[in-house]
Length: 243
Ligand code: SF4
Image 1 (tube, rainbow, N blue to C red):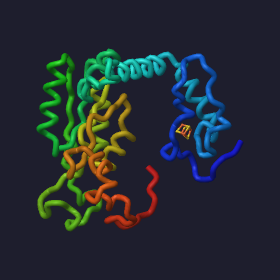
Image 2 (image 1 turned 135 degrees about the vertical axis):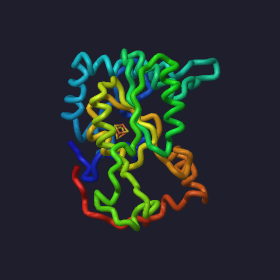
Image 3 (image 1 turned 180 degrees about the vertical axis):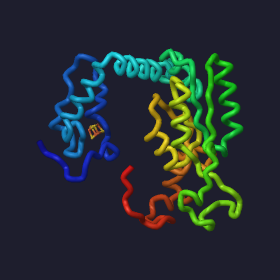
Image 4 (image 1 turned 180 degrees about the horizontal axis):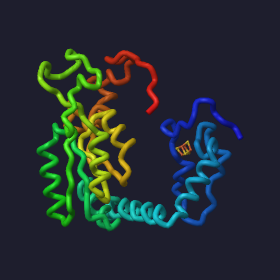
């Protein structure tokens, strides 16, 4: 089977072959028509393995409920499909469908107010809520090797964001579902690495754009954010770290 050397490149493709808009029961288009970079051509064994995972009853049920929830977020009207739920509503509905009563909120200290509001909303909707601030543990940044000049507000004590502790506390508190609110890039990566309960992301951190990173993407073809497409970065290249 033909394979591109570059890897799977779904983002370069129209997606017609994996999502053909044809009636159920009609023969699927041949994968021979798929581009060489299509993962359906490059990784048939992985796809077969993933399909097998859905045979595990708990995985199958979780996946089924996620797709049920996805479907409930649309309404078919005479004008076409309409979206009807915000992500907060979607998160609560999905948690209820899964029988989850105890939610763990891992939040950024910069979103303390939002965390309080969200916690109340969850509680008003019948959930128990455990919440953990990213600064938990009070480990100063210099303890993990930062220079004073690399801190945001030297010479004050400046605790690291501590996603490992956030994740482990949420694991220990035996929540049913962890919900991330505004963790930074990299801190969220560590959280995912250490969290052992199902987790979902309510919002990501974007300090500049009201926690809506896609705003820059939508403006990237206009002069306002065309710099995103230009080579170059503020940060020096480092050695690859394997977690
Ligand atoms: S799975 Fe294949 S057909 Fe679908 S988007 Fe990726 S490359 Fe395109």
